[in-house]
Length: 152
View 1 (cartoon, rainbow, N blue to C red):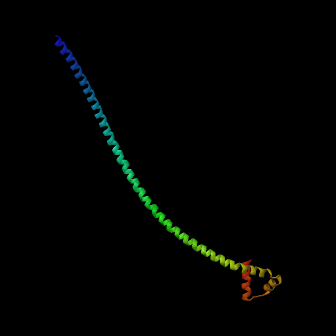
View 2 (spheres, one colour):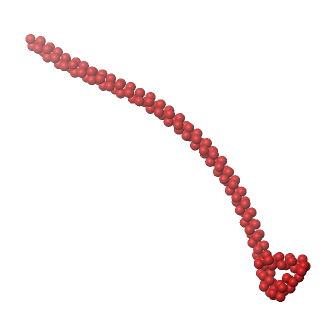
View 3 (cartoon, rainbow, N blue to C red):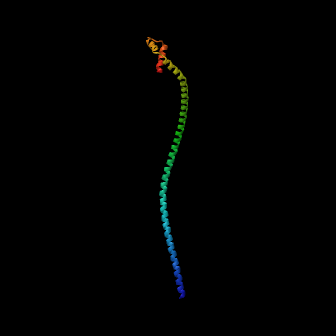
């Protein structure tokens, strides 16, 4: 009887271990099923996201193409601006040279104008009346009178 009790006890222990292992396997199977379900859901989500990524990639490619074209346009405009700047610089240099020449001519003309002003200031009323009295003054007198009008 003791042997039977021993076998019963041993059988109970083995049955307990086997039941415990069955429970562990069932829990493991449930975990694997849950994990599989999560992986499938993530794969579906990934497929949706990949479509979104493809759309965004296409948009980015279009944007890159637009930026490339605008960069080329900007380079062309910069080249045109550089050419225009060179033309403006040349015109500015020419204008500066012309101004310098005009200033030199003006510097030469100022003393002559001052002498002419002094000559006009020394005219007397009597000389002007005599000029007025001439019915047809000589051409030299007409030229001098025109010059005086210009200076006045």
